[in-house]
Image (tube, rainbow over the protein chains, first blue to last red):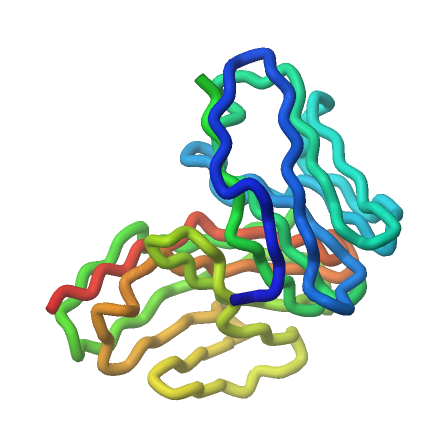
Length: 113
Length: 116
């Protein structure tokens, strides 16, 4: 158990809908990262937050957004969902921003029908 | 741009065999970090090792060992006396301080199957 929690574990929804994925980092970690794992794209970095502020952005679609709250938990919002958004979404956390080890949560498996 | 290549898509071995998973990386950064993660069938990503670009010492942890060679831009992972529980997808990842901050660039992964 990495100490990173993600909810829900599974999500099934329809095209055009909006969902919110939630992540709680390890105790003491200030950085939260979101990654997407899909069959065609592999594991890709989406976005990073550090202590409530956006720190880095990867290949995140405009339909996706994220935030980190004062209690350091983070949410990833996916809207206008398309079939191609079906993937495993991971949250990871680390102590700060200096290439420390990122510990991953169990992931949320999203299926868009 | 940074890139990680894991040329072996799938490897199948018989229990107790030794197996080496290859990882080759590209980066222009002088300071960078390399990682290996394991993804068992249950799906989570489990951290195995982190190595910085200034430390080329090989590392051994039980049946696991890692060989980092800057001259060939490789960070290979060997499992000695493999066990069925080692069956998983293994990912090599790179984080370059200057160009990519803390984000991880992953390879495509190697599916290891250990047969009894």
